[in-house]
Image (cartoon, rainbow, N blue to C red; front, side, top):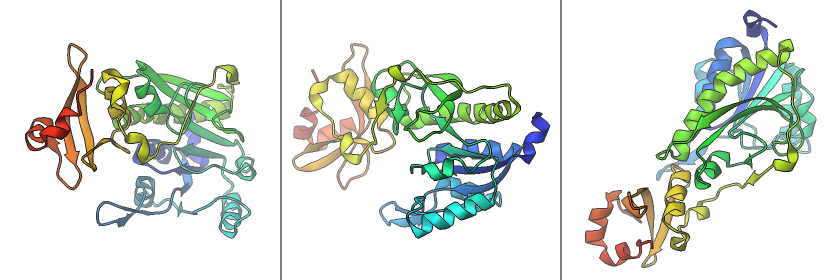
Length: 299
């Protein structure tokens, strides 16, 4: 298939967060995106305002049909209805970018060329839900993106292409996700075209080298001050912007918003947010909460 013919490709996109939008954007510019499947709207902020996922907002701007089923499983009426509509669209390819739900096996065979996933690591390293966060937490100097065919396993499908992305000392999960998926968007389009025209062939992953990551929860943000300055600093960056890191002082939660390592490799807290208060510098926090501030010392 020549690049000019890619506009005729019928694609259904599965994705939810803001860093999935670059992939949806490039597909909408160069192919025919016939549907966007994303998570249901969720309440956000202190006022719990019902907010659409970023991919939904973009898709609606482009006039792309949006689905938000709360399940894809065919043993549920909603899942059965979705599967029928999905098949009726006759997609050539389905693309998954951080959708947030498992794709049931009965859907995988519907698109003519299968499901293609954009994963935020150099597989088989860091399979699972939090590859970018884990790369930062582990002190990696580089990570990458893998475009792969999906099978029934967790990120176990054959690889189509990869690209390496450096990790800077100041990168947070937020900044690194942006880097990875901006690279991934361009690579995704090129890979789809190459796969369909036969110039790119699937390569089996070296499964024996696989490592795995976990689903991150808010509780994972609790700082263990005994783990050392470098590990704590990496954890703060790895869990920024979500779920964030925190410590408990006098029964109250104190969020750790920013920190860095000094030239002598000591942890320097830059900004915190006491429970019920606005963000403040650590200097201001130390003046107002001296007893708590002393607990932040790391040997």
